[in-house]
Image (cartoon, rainbow, N blue to C red; front, side, top):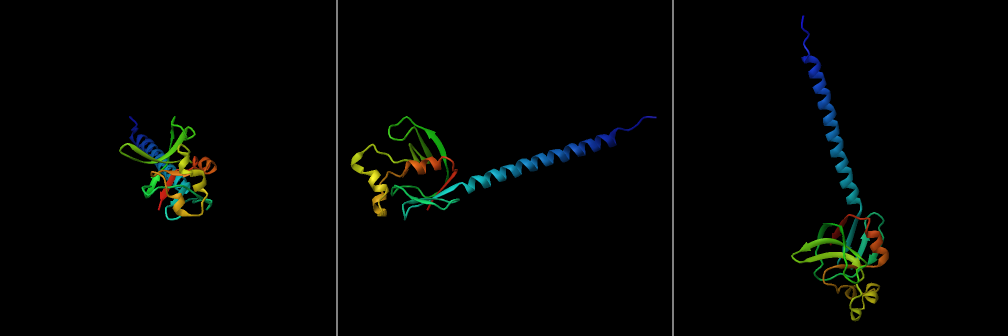
Length: 153
């Protein structure tokens, strides 16, 4: 008498299918968790106030912006740079043709612009003066390195 192995194969296939579906579900869940975490690490720049706020801690800081600073929601990407005045890196958020909009430390390459003075000014109009990048203090920049999303309103 021959024994049929098909029922056992069916059970094995069902178990394998179940395990695979659990793994796929777990992977999808992990992706969702990662995306939620990234969204929780968001900063918001209000162009009317020329200030940047960390969404999770609600602390806000004066920044330098420009009239051409793009509005929208952008992923943040750390870039190394050898250009003078940037401290070796910038945080890019939007690229257009041959220009990268970025968050970076206050650029001091042109002293006549008085950027260090202007970033602490209470007058918003003093802080609207860049070519579109967002200049921040060193302390704010260091904190920004741990964030993933920029929203400019």
